[in-house]
Image (cartoon, rainbow, N blue to C red; front, side, top):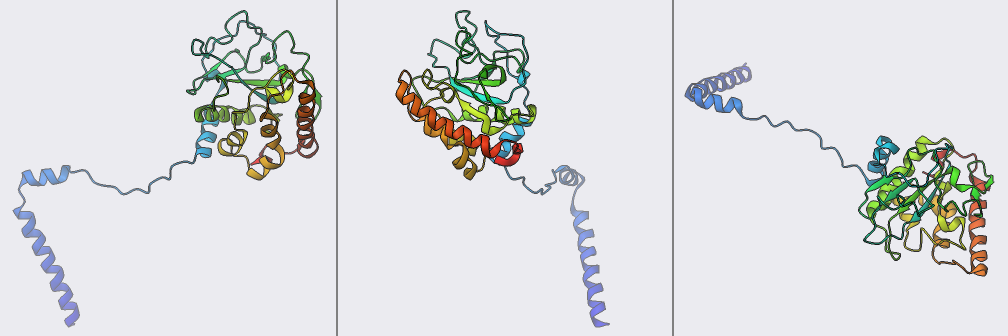
Length: 284
């Protein structure tokens, strides 16, 4: 009973003290107290990683989001897309990514252009339009690539989404260029049933005797592993040939171009033999 009485006494004392304290607070003071903001503790959300952020942006992206600067030479024909080809624009300060293909003297065009600050434009009304990445004059003479079924194709332009990355004199590409490229490649995975990340290539891997872009300064590992989220072991086994064959230009040299094409062919054939029929998620 003594313990119960002590507890009751403590409770009574608390209420008495509270009553006296309330009596001492004026209405003005009470109004100030009541209007004070209440601090609500919430669990802080962890910031998204680079890969998570890019993946989220890819889900929200649409080709029509990019401003249109229609290429002077283009076709209204529509083709399903299953590969991506990366180029550099070799532009100069007096040029702009917006005007690169607007000139009628340019017989080539591209699906997308990305400048060094990350500004991205499109040169075609529809992503399904052919991108004349080798130009109208020689677009049927390239050495070919493989499609999603492992079949070797000659007319790359019809089935390719082409990326034109602004670059001058083999400068290192900017981080924002890698990011914007990755967003659109991941978008392509959702948009095109037959597209795979292992069907991304550079211009020089298609026709090494005439082209050397996307060039020695392009970091393929950074694009695939750091930005697209491809597993490092997958990159090392299947995509490393892109970096190895981008490390030197063989333009105009038939012998060196032939040796380079042999390396490219081995890399492409390994993809054909091991990965055709594999789900898109296999590289993650």
